[in-house]
Image (cartoon, rainbow, N blue to C red; front, side):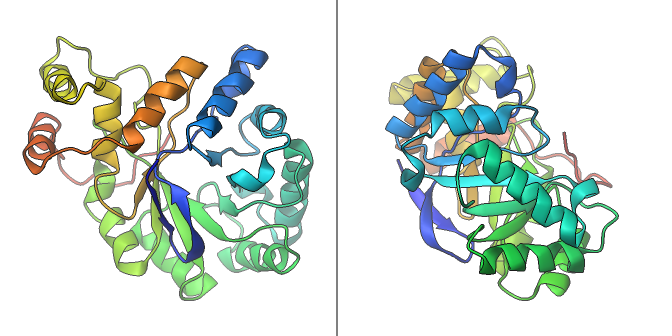
Length: 279
């Protein structure tokens, strides 16, 4: 599994990680088995959030006895992100995850609480050893500029954003900003939501042909395209151990410049939206 620096964090993180949104809807033993199989295959970056129902509980079960292998991330809801609320939310997440620390803690999206309050709480948690680093999610460039000013230079570890073949809006401005400022860009929902291109669609045909040339799958090709350059990483969810194995296969896949260009043409960028898309 390829690993990359995670913004200013002094360690490398698996470029293909594991998302957990809606994982609590799955059969619990199947969900935990998928996460554990992902860990076996090097997908040691696990992302979750207090908003994700019982996902943190599922993750806690899956990582039991393996905490030191992980780069573990969770998120605070904007409504809870006051100075005291952030600390309390983090402590609840730690309890559900059955751990004493997070490797990164994120503000889930911009909210009404002043960023200075949220980031002061993050710094308090960091000083206490309850988090290693902190970042943001669903932040557009103006939000990132405000966060950079409020938090201080070099503090933001990552911006987690929506990014898949059908939604490439971050490439207009967010991704260049993250690259310029040394902030990791973590792509969530890399397969979309039930709209991954089928094998008979024009884009799907391109993915299938490239996959066949590498003995890979179309989804592996899609994941590899999405992490084709630093500072990108991605966190696909797996519904089974077999799905986790497929996701992990993208970690060693390498696409040629011609193949990347063919995918780029098949899934064009499109105009810059007025607002950064999020789910």
